[in-house]
Length: 510
Ligand code: NAD
Image 1 (cartoon, protein in one colour):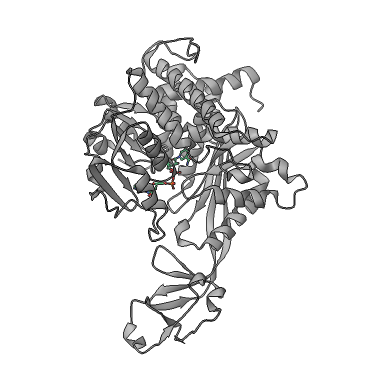
Image 2 (cartoon, protein in one colour):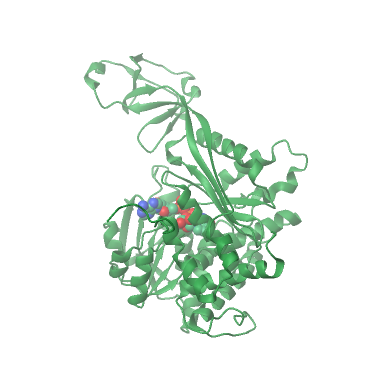
C-alpha cells in the first residue's frame, strides 16, 4: 500500500489525539457545526524569536587536564559566579573585584573546584510562542511555559485546554498559552530576566488586560510575571490601570492572596468533594504524587492538613517512598529552603527510601495525583495503578489509552480541566481586584474558590450520572444529556455547552 496520506484524512498528532474528547463530547451534544469549526483550531498561532546576549561561562575542563597541572589557583569573588545545573558557572564582571586571576590558554583553576575553560559570551536565539485559542467568553487567558520540550502542537493543546477550563470554572475568559523553548535552569538570573523582557517586548502588540492575559506555568513564577508586567507597562502614562495584563503576580504588586496555592487548593477541594459524596473526608486516606512543584507541593501540604498521608513522590530528579508517610512540610523545606538542592528535587531526601520512577505507580494508595507534565499515565501505567481515584493536578497527564484503561478498571477520575481550575479561578479574582484597585483577604479568596470549584465539580458529576438537579449550591439541569457518561467527557460537555451559548445568543461576530 502506498504511504501517501489520503487527502482529507487527518494526520494523527499529539494535538488531534488531545482533541479526541472534544469531538466525543461535541458528537454527544450535537454541537453546532460552525461552533465546532471555530473551536477545532485556534484563532491565532504566533511563533516568533527572541535573542539574548549570554554571559561568559566557566565550563568544567574534562580533557587535556595534565597540560594545566601546574596552573595556580585563581580566586574570584563567589558572588560573581552563578552555578548552573550542568556544573558550569556564569561569570559576571563583579567576580573580578579584588580577584587573583591566573589564566593559561583560556583555562583557570578555581580554588577548591578544579579546572574550567572560559567560554566567551555570545548572543543566542530562542523560539517563542503565544497561541490564542478562543475568545467567545472573554479575553484569551493562559500560562507562560519555559521548557526545552515545547512545540506549537503542545501550546495548541494547552491553549484549547484553557478554553475548556475557563468555561468550566465559569470565569469570563477564553483560552491561550505560550512560552519559550528554553531550559530556564541553563541561564543565569540576569539572562532569564533579559529573555523575559525581550519576550514581552515582542508580545506586547498581541496582548493586553482585556485581550490576552498570561500567567505562570511550568518554569515561570511570580518574579517572571513581575518582569512581564514591568516591560508591558514601561513608559505607559496610566500604567497602574494595566496591572491586569498578567496574573500570578507577587501580592505586593497587585497579585491576589491565595494565588500561589490556588491550583493545589482547587485540586484539594475537588478531592474533598469526592470523599463528601461517599459521606466521608480525606482524613485517614493516603496518596501518591508525581511532581513536587507549585501544584504538587501545595496540594500535598493541604491534603496533609486534612489528614491524608503522602506515601511516595516522583519528580524530575528522583522518587521517594515511605510506608509510614512523608512529612510534607519537612520535604518542602528540603526541596525549597536548602541552597545546596540546586535542582529543587525530592531525590536524596534522607527520611524516605529511594525507589525507581516505575515503582511509584505500584504503590497501593487511595489516590494518585499526577502534577508534573502531560502524557505520564499511559496505558501500561494505568494497568499498574493500585488506587481508587486519579486526581489530575497537571494538564493532560493521562493519554487516551490510559483513559480507556482507567475506565475499564473502574478507577475513578477527577479530570484536569476541573482539577486544575483553581489557578485560573483565582487569576480571575486577581484580575477583578486589579480592575477595582482592591485587595481581598486570603479567607475571602478561598471562600469564593471553594464555592466555585465545588459547585462546578457537582455539575460535572451530575452530568456524568445523568442526574439533572437544582440545589442551593448548583444547577445542573441545563447540562445533563439524557444518559450517563464518564467524568472527562462530562467536563467537556459542560465546557462546550457554556461556550456554545455565547455563539447561539450573541452570534458569530465576537
Ligand atoms: P512546576 O514547574 O512548579 O513543577 C513541575 C514539577 O514536575 C517539578 O516537581 C518537576 O520536578 C516535575 N517534573 C518535571 N518533569 C518531570 C518528569 N519527566 N518526571 C517527573 N516529574 C517531572 O510546575 P507546576 O506549576 O506545579 O505545574 C505542574 C502541572 O500543573 C503542569 O502540567 C501545569 O501545566 C499544570 N498547571 C499548573 C498551574 C499553576 O497554577 N501552577 C495551573 C494549572 C495547571
